Length: 546
Image (tube, rainbow, N blue to C red):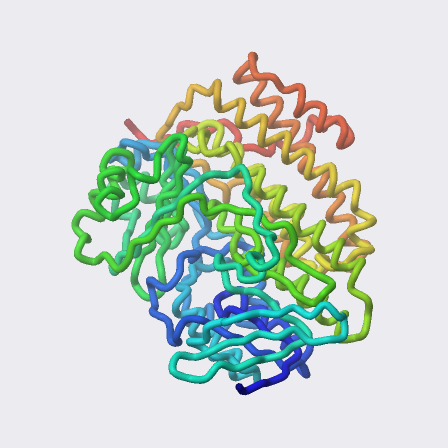
């Protein structure tokens, strides 16, 4: 039996494992890193893995932190933001409410073909001097109890003898297989029971061509809605449309089983029947492309939690090996970026001979807090996805919360800055409580909503403070300026929560706003009389002719 010794063994060479290897090499060039990947490389393009859309944190991680901007520019597609159509049951896309931006916002994100990207990442890991082994099956993992002894991983390529590799650190990046999670009994369910089906079509889907109405087509400065992550939404579900650089298009249906059981969509033909009923415009487009089907897959109850992802015993779980939320808002690559950053910091501390215990516990608490705060955006919220009046309010809040707190921490390199986080503990705590209260409020508001579906566009690019908040992620801030930024963020969220409370109460007098009012008061009291933050009532110029 062959035996090798390394500083870090990463079990899994997908997106989480490969990006972690690059981040470790960037931080500690002297580390000996071994990456073991079960799949053979090169992996197929277009239909390799789901998870194609990135948002600001993940995009910044790939582009700037890992220095992969040139690949993204040359081989992937720039995303035209998120876009939402309240198009259930309609074949006239110009006659429904659209939420999105008329022009790209300042900070770039990407539509990523995972096959192209992971093939590139595997090559890049090898180019940067690390060992990347594909077609490698993990046969066993033994974690050392002694803090000085190495861990041991047994692995094998088909037709070759078993090998044993030892390392001070072992990282499980095996995705949902979760080798260490299963071995250590760390898997935990959550209360989010949604499921997803998805497939890829070897031809572009262009929602820009779904209407010939000149006014509708002129809403965007360029006819490139197809570059958005397009969401077709209805009560209890959403459908994604994501273009891939390979020329294919990804289609997914994500649903709460209380509204739309998985059995209604768990094959391509069943999914098409479901689309014919709920999203007929997309059905019409796909009906002519049936022969272009490349794959089909589904997950029942895709969301899950984990007891622990970082350990002072020198192991960690990366990406989907630990926790997974929901594909709405595309947070997968964000949480890879955040988790990998904490793992890299822990490995660096250990490499420098510094103790891990306190930092491991704090990072675990912070990471779990991020997960719980983000889960509040999804849990029990699918019912309002078909509400053209309330969902846009929720989305403005959700973006604002994301760009004001988590994205600011990541873009400005403060995730592992315990001093800064300690100074801002009160502000961050108030923001988290406000978020929970707003999510409950919009849920209740939607239960009373008339759900008017007006033929207009709610243009995010027309809201100056919203565009500026996005742009501000690119600022360079010193420590005092960063603390001021987070305090301003807390004030902004308080003001927005106040306006949401006022608008909901005005439109639905029976709506109980006591919990949200209490959260606003606890955060410092209501703010009134400033800039209107939600979309102002739209005039006739924003409404299409009958």
